[in-house]
Length: 292
Image (tube, rainbow, N blue to C red):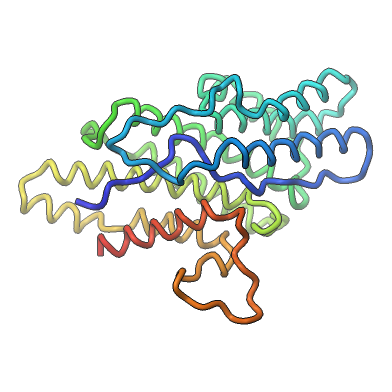
């Protein structure tokens, strides 16, 4: 049986989601303040290890009432000021929904889904943070579906997952993979050194693939030895490879290097803010090697 799957109950990745929001009007300055506070508080609140042993109960989230207090205060201030353009409110709506999702407030995140769908067509989508927010809005249904399934599995506890299909997790990951491909083709996404939005979404999909792979592997182990071996050979490490490739497509080259490889003298180092993504990329590589 493969090494125990280490997965986080919460996303712990968005440490570099800082944004630029156009010209320096009071309204765009307020929106930038929301994004800046969000990035700062995510770093402060979500820097535990990149995964947990599936034998352990899901770790308690940052208390829902205490997650992102300065960001949510900035959102309330922007909303209460009145007169904000629809496009500004659309960006705030998406960010607020992502806070609910990332802080584990899944009931609120589910209630946000319709508002995010309504906001998506209003978003600026040209470059950088605007394109990032549009990507988050388009990927939101799949992010919500995948993290909801994982939350349900973790509440069961232990590694003996129910004998059920992981198709929902695979479908959520595949939908994110398709959306990332479309967003990349459209252009405008900032590099991961500037904004980790695409990398965050890619890593979420990879985690869904990891869970789906673990459920399939667990199902194979329920069979007799010969059938179990055939089952495991049939599904192999395809899902893990898909997830690792997806992260790698958005991870800087320096972060994809083997830790023991000496960097070139003039090579830029892997940004410290991308450490959690790099951890998942390497973890998937190790799991693929074990399953080969």
